[in-house]
Length: 215
Image (tube, rainbow, N blue to C red):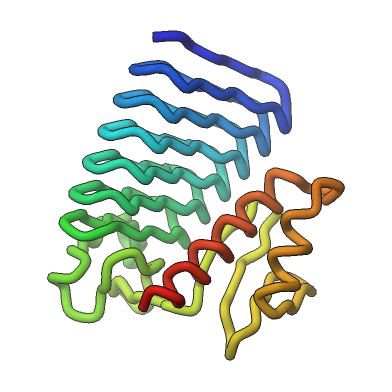
């Protein structure tokens, strides 16, 4: 039941115990929990909240922030503009009502994305593997008023404004254009100038490689 809290920019709060909480308020900070029923919360812009425990929640409120959960029945929630919510556990919810946001959810889950129709913000809902054209664990966004899946997007937001895309065997983000080995080597470099962003990019590349190998 411990709590870790940070308030500085680019700071990290990490907990591993049951029901523990990690909270950050600085920009580009990271809150991470690995215990059952724990919560990770960030309020800064381009920050990251990550949980791996069953029923744990990841919540972000800042612009371009990322909320990620891997446990079953865990929820990832973002409210900022251009944010990303990702859940891969069974029966989890990915909620990203901010404009120009992204979301993905695993089997048995739900995706909620916001769309401004010219008069008001409306919430669009899709059920992976049930809604036509929306597979599980694929990033989705709103295009022309509908939720659309884009299997080439591996990470909508790395914390610096770059999107990671897979294109004909290449991993592309900003000016970077790598094959698999180059991508892993570059973003696993401990001397990388933006280690938090590199960690997000590396995780996305490794997840894609693993998914491709087992497909």
